[in-house]
Image (cartoon, rainbow, N blue to C red):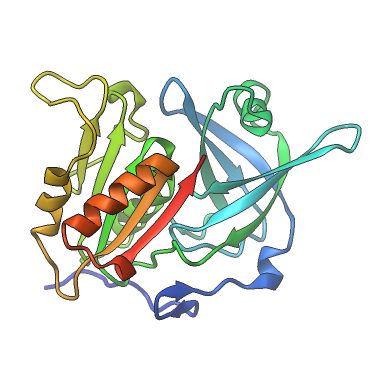
Length: 251
């Protein structure tokens, strides 16, 4: 007996998720309801967003903060939560040194605060759960990938999904308590006893690509510029078709 499959989405067209420009252009008032510490440098911020139109895992949104004097600051952030009908979304943010917006979130923001959001934005990196997904992320690059993992679990999808995530050490592994059998963690500076230390390598990628599902993998890579280049080269060298690699990078 097979489990539930991904529902048909009206946004789905081959290779891309459509974005409603009218919906994405609307600014909505979001109320911060919860803050959860993930690592010493990263926290998850949960918001109630009345009228939120829903999203596809991998999409992002724009946040706008407005000061008392009218000054505004805007940033794009990936959505961490799985799509659901709760009217809530979650963002997981690193505390960037001297970061104007991330600094406010990590040092000033409290439950009950209100900010503005608009989205969801971008369809290129979205994964509605309709094809095998091979996910590679580093640091906070795991955020949109975790939305995919959570969606996969929440819907009980049977389509194959694997996650290869890199962090400096166990204490820096965002969502470390949530990972299961679908996840392989790589540690670059310190690791638990018996676990080697080093960069994501060809052997890590080859082990995942050795298990080829019907139709092959759609690979999603997210992280810094250097990580995105490194991971995509590993994929290509291991035989992953370039046209089936989607990259989202920052920094």
